[in-house]
Image (cartoon, rainbow, N blue to C red; front, side, top):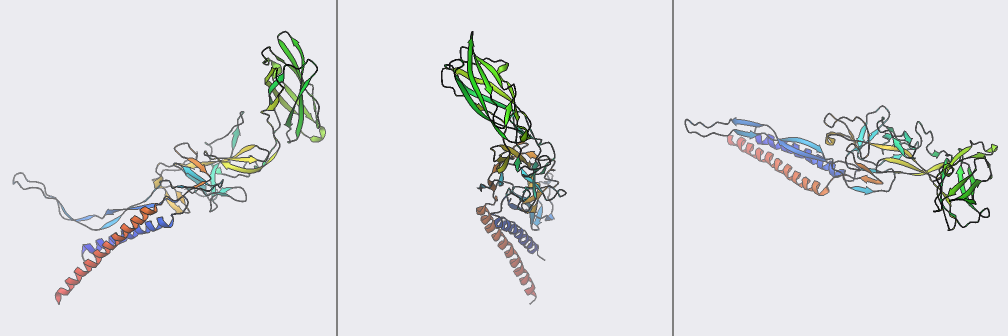
Length: 432
């Protein structure tokens, strides 16, 4: 049988494989996070009819090259092209895309294998789990610590866990934010230096909260009481109000120098104790006041409270996801609280991952092992684009061009078979 016929068969088979890949690419042109495939060919081994001959200097005969006949074509590789697709804006808070390298980490159940995806079309189930469209949990971190400066941090060295926006092992109900008692308040502004001694007062209202979230309207009254040498004395006092009483610490004195600056002594940062009435059932509130930002000039009094901590309880209203993967809840009391941190996975050879359907990949021996999740933007991973989705990286113009070339290659190989068949037919007809 003629070698050309088998070469043609191999050509048909390989070009059909390439057409299969092209067809799959075009079919997934609008699939979120899809990575296109690419087929490359290689020649099959060649039959050697005659080996190479070396030059013979004694006889003056030159060398000869080997004589070989190729035996067709085969598929060399079917590669996954990991270039990033274009972004589509959705404004859906749970939609995420990755700006750079990395994959989202998902798993279907606590005992299943970790899988990886670039498709960030996530949502919430009725329990508050962040999940993929097929119901797989999105992984990251939930446990965090709050520093003395009020900032939150996650231990990204700890094992990853499913992200739940409604509860976690520490915070059983993240939909409600517990009240926080007021512990400090800074007062800023000016006290009018032209006030007569013991004659005029200036009152500053301030709202504080107890551990249950009850609010108390305090009134801090400032009165100029005298001048001694280089210093002017002012007395401040907090009177009892509705729902609370003040202990003996709720009064004191501050001084200003001749330049209108407050004298920094122990009276500048006093601590007061507000005692809620018995029927409230709350703990006493100890508040540190800070008068260090006050001045005394011949201008209208304009003191007001700033940086007052404490707040009432609140319910979650909405949430947002930052470029670092931080999920932040916004509550009805105006406070913000972290709900979780989305983790990413990076690989030494992303093209070595194996497709598993549903836009999912698993690791292989050539992709590199998955060891731990990392925060977005670290360890070579990209940052997140919230409210956007990464679309397919299929280039339709290239795919249609490849389709034409593949079709012509298929036709050419089929012509090899028909021509070889005609030659064989001529050979058969010789006996007539």
